[in-house]
Length: 169
Image: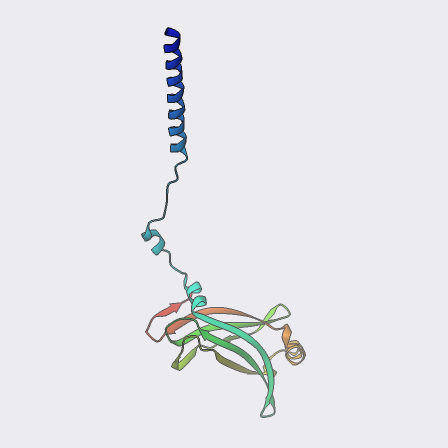
């Protein structure tokens, strides 16, 4: 009988040991859901440059030449698109025109729209300059190899029709 009791006690101890181990393992592998508090997510803001880029699509189309009053004019062509839900009243950026690794011309003219630039409406733009104002090596590129000219944009500001502004420092 004592043998049966000791076997029963051993068996009961083994069952309890396995039960305790199972409980410990399940506690180790419990999945806890962790999320950031909403306030932390809401405090993240776009930089002014990123806000500018997200608000306006500016695409350089290319360069064309035309004669005007016995002078050759260089046309720098763009397409501008408002990507926001609010009209744009004024936009300002600079464009560096680059050839042979050097900036040969910088355009820095803000645009003011008499009627706000509507949402998602493409607007073709052309800026002109006289060919004779450029150095000889640039004239040759503009006359014969315009595809070698690249541009670099620098965001400045946007003013919306509701009065809000984006100013890039």
